[in-house]
Image 1 (cartoon, rainbow, N blue to C red):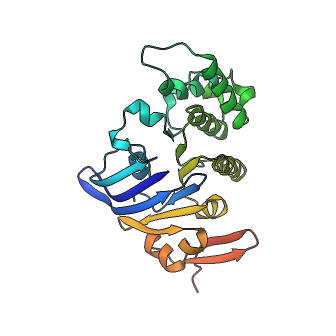
Image 2 (image 1 turned 120 degrees about the vertical axis):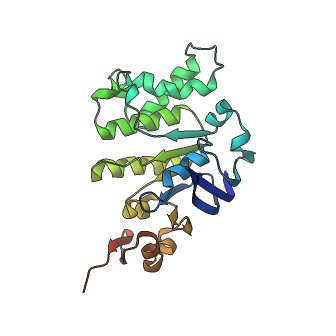
Length: 256
């Protein structure tokens, strides 16, 4: 579904990530991890062709994302972020309907029956259909996250990219959001999300991309990526891993 080959990413003239080489399959949820400032969000934006790459290629369904028109990219890739306060005065239904714009020519502003059906399906998918007539600005952080995911679902793309979908959420709501993303992957979407919590990634991701020191340090399942030496290389902190009935868990190493 997504092929990243020999990619270098820079920001403000500084090489941020070098030699990235990985793939993301259909029906897979992938967590992008790493310390602050390492380039997680920039990588996500590069996957969506919202940030140029210095070298290499990013292909989706064998098409170079940089060569696609904006509308064609938006029909293949949905980039979800929940930091846009400009939508607070819109109704929930109107916010989700923004995801339908890539399916229209620029002069077509009227919603079609297919648009309305897609919006209703997306709201039902995130269990927010009862909130359709509320203003977005009246919702809690967790409810807003669900609405922005619904916006991405309304685009009806095979790829869903999410920037910190569990940021500022309590444990229960974060778990619900990640369980929803897991279900979407099982329905056929390629889901890539930036996370900060290592244990959230271990519990919900099929695969983890761990960034650090300007490169991809490790790629694989939690068992293979969450090795103490690799984690210390990424975060500069001794780490311990514990195997539980629910899978591997990670903690900062206690001083002796």
